[in-house]
Image (cartoon, rainbow, N blue to C red; front, top):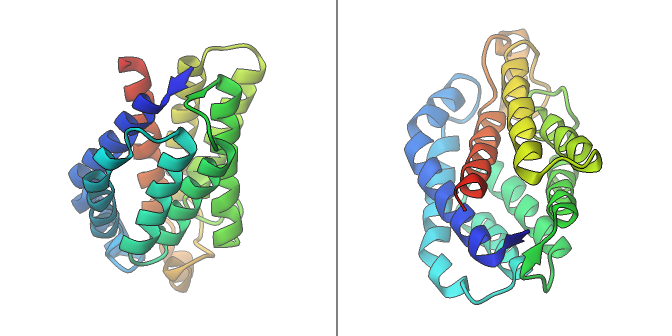
Length: 210
């Protein structure tokens, strides 16, 4: 089970991680994008972190929805609507819940990834955050379906996401600003896939800790 307190801890930890990684993510984005991915995410999650204390008594669905709405309103570029939608869609699945079963957690992650696909009109293999998120979701679902624990499943999900980030270096970008580079985008890892990996790593760290 994952409870509301752990969700708050996860979001707070993600905010710290985004601040820590903002320069590196921005460097990645300088190479193939607008050069603002890390700065934007850090700013958005800082705003989320400031609001977190007022959400501690809320159910998980409300917490996630609030995170999503805050990201949409404070993060510039494409990542605000994409990550914002992901959190809001996950929130819809968790509506009214103060605890998540492994199946609930998996369903919420599935809804988040589906939200990114819908909002970004993208699929796996286009050098986007989905190249980390889709393999992670598949690994999580497969493990939970086969009876493994959430920690084991998230460990495999993080491994799959890391491989996905490496995969983005080998393909041509066909979405967003990076698509303008065409073949020149090969050799660069996708900033969105990288920030997605960092978030998944942070989720796993908090689950292991708590």
